[in-house]
Length: 182
Image (tube, rainbow, N blue to C red):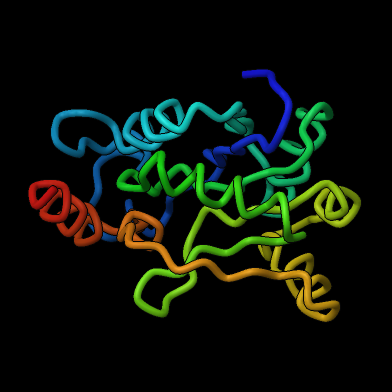
């Protein structure tokens, strides 16, 4: 989806090997959660946020490569919210809160009960660092560079979906339980 302002980058390029190793019979993003694929839950939350978004699902060697490709694909964006596709319980309101905080900070990280979560927001000054990412490390180097100049904000959120990723069948069962409690 095109638009201005921060764009949500939904990363769906991973191989999901841990999920298969845990006994999963399909890719984790296609695994059913309350009758719908995990990725569809994530995309529904992104749509509910009202923010522009981009789905990065081409095969890439690592998360860094996926992020760099997604940033290249969204040159009109003034910032990015990096959201792994395996966070099906994240809430649209959380995405909006990170996007709003990005107006005052270079990097915004949601924190649920003391645990750093996703999406991590990056403003336009982070573009070059994001474009240079490669391999499996994700954007940790960009976060560290911004921490060094005190440009990272941690925002407390009440959304357990920011830290509920699906890597194993047990994670899927836990997400199903949390979804049932909503």
